[in-house]
Amino acid sequence: MWKVENSTNTQYLIKFESEIILPFFNMISDVVIEIEQGEIILPLEKTDIWKYTEHFRKASVDQKNLFTYIMQKTVSGEKLQDLFYSIVVTFDSSYVEQIYLLYKQQNKEILDGNYDIPQIQVDDIFKSIFVIYYYNTFFADDYVWMTLAGETYNRKEFHRNFKLENKMAVCPYCDVDTAVAGSNNNVEHFLPKSKYPLIAMNPLNLLSSCYACNKADEGKGDRIPEVPIVSPYNENIGDFAKFEVDFLSKKITLINSGRQEHHNYFKFLQLYSRYSDRMVFESVDHEANSLFETLTNSGSPTLKEIDLYIQRREKMNNLSLALRSIISNYPMYKTFK
Ligand SMILES: [Zn+2]
Image (cartoon, rainbow, N blue to C red; front, side, top):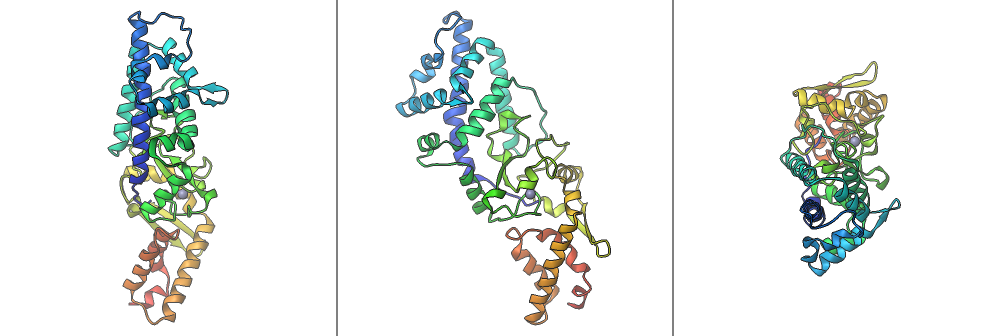
């Protein structure tokens, strides 16, 4: 709902791309081309064939140490170099080139703010590299980040940077929940990593969300959104959310006042049904009543002051969008000028 930025985390993830993702592609490419040119004869005896690439030989000592570390780290019984090996003996240079171009293209689309990108199947080996090794493992690996950035970095740091930069304590997806507690912090992929593995490390595909938004039954899970769609990196989607309230049935209704891409966003996050929950009404109702109480205790506020009061609490307190929208329906509100 709230427009967000992610420039601090972007700086870290750009380093990850330039020092790990791109060199890894280059090393694969070096080997498959040498195999095709007959310079390397199959079957390969060495599982650490990557060490013999021109790319590795020319790397600095630090880069060599980093690559040796990530290639030989065992995750679920397998090393990254085993996957490297499988790739070079399985795929030809045109397939590797295709994956590389798809990687470049999909990541450029996301950085340009376009989330309407076709889902293209990539081989499971590449999926594992991006999801299991890069995202699940190296994202939170102290050695990797000490080498890349001179300091540790992990999901906790990601959340911290994200919230500080956006001056935000609520979940930017929904505004229903806060996302402060460590247990309610999910680094969330807007386009799911299971279906778009090549953008699993893209900073503008990652966002700090509440637990519910990340879950399949309450939020988006790993579904693919209907397109066209917008993300909180594109615009302040809350501007296109209107709310109606029915005091009799104690229910708030979210209404799209924007276009198709906003409707698809609300649907993707299941916000129509989440806002209609009785708990949401109770929470907004409670806030509205205590707001009137606070303000009338300190004189007779104007409508503008009430509005400013809600604006000042937004992004730090949840449900501000709904509160601001429905407060004018309260009979008390109509007595203010
Ligand atoms: Zn949320």
